[in-house]
Image 1 (cartoon, rainbow, N blue to C red):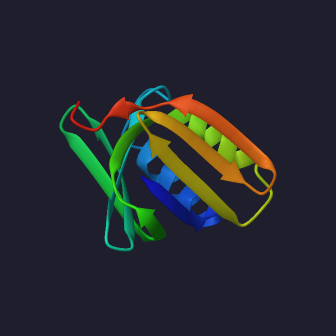
Image 2: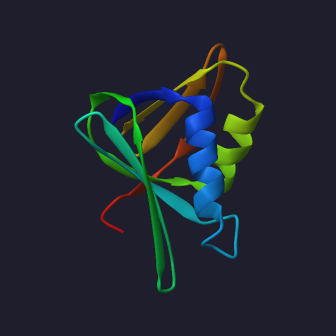
Length: 108
């Protein structure tokens, strides 16, 4: 998966889905279809998905640790965030800043 999205749009979506979970350590499913990114969180019987317009260069799906992602994106200063996942290695870039983490297979 490789996408680019507006930082504020992504941050607002991540803040919204935080409300469905009691813990900030859960993962968020990132999935793409056409030029749409959907972030999804599931907690017990509650599922929340937020679709957003994004530049999708390579489609796919991966679960990314929520807290690591929120902390990183909150500190970024540029407007566009790039997220690339290959073999469950996730690289998030924004301007000259970047973070790398390990994702989880979307099948989980």
